[in-house]
Structures are given as C-alpha cells and as structure tokens.
Image (tube, rainbow, N blue to C red):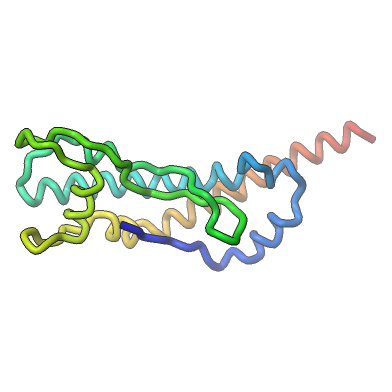
Length: 163
C-alpha cells in the first residue's frame, strides 16, 4: 500500500534551504525534519480516525491493534536524491483478532483499503490525504518558516557577539 504526496510550489523555499548553513541543513534533519514530522503526525491522526470509522461501518469487532499500527516514520530519501522524507504507513505486526485468529496488521489495513474478492473496499488512507492534504502542506510550510526564522535569529545573535 503506497500513497505518495509531493509538495510542489515551494521552489523558492527549496532554493533558500540549499543556500543555508549547516545549522539548518544537517544529517539530523534540522528544522525541515521537524516540520515534516509535524505534518506527518497530523495526517497519521486523520488516517487513524478514518480507519476506526471504516472498521465500525462494516460492523466488525476490533482489538484496536491495526489502528495503533498506523504510524508516521522517517524514511530514507528517494533513490538518487537528497532530502527528508516522512511516511504515514502501517507497521507490520501480528495479533490475535477479535474472533481469536492470528492476523497481520498490514493485511487487515490492505483489505480495508483495497478490498478483495470477498470483501468490498472501505478506503481509509486515501480519503485522509484528500481531506486534509492541503492542511498538511500548510502546516509543514508554516512550521518550516517559523523554525527557519528562529534559526536565522539565533545565527544573527551569535554573529553579533563574534564581532
């Protein structure tokens, strides 16, 4: 299950980031990582809520394990590229379902999202992206700008003291 969301229209921000000092662009991610993490957590929370509703509308009993397995995690940069990447995904895990049978969190999430020959689809992740994708982009860009302003102010204060 793969749903990708690309941020576009931030070319000026990306050019500015590439020109910034190491305090901003670091191996640990700096403000970019933190801003993306904040947006990913917002999307994760919406996805969990949609998943809970999808399970309830089918009238199924739930242990809540699949819902807990929906996480926001830092991912590796796309092959051949640099930068930060955060994923909203379902963590692999096995649990005993409400009927007493071993079940995979990933399999359960996939069956709900895409359905099967025996079960109609009850999407929960794609509607999350469609519902709050714009809000997530706004959260990331606002938080990134706020964090960059803070770093610039700290660098300015440090440079004033060095003269």
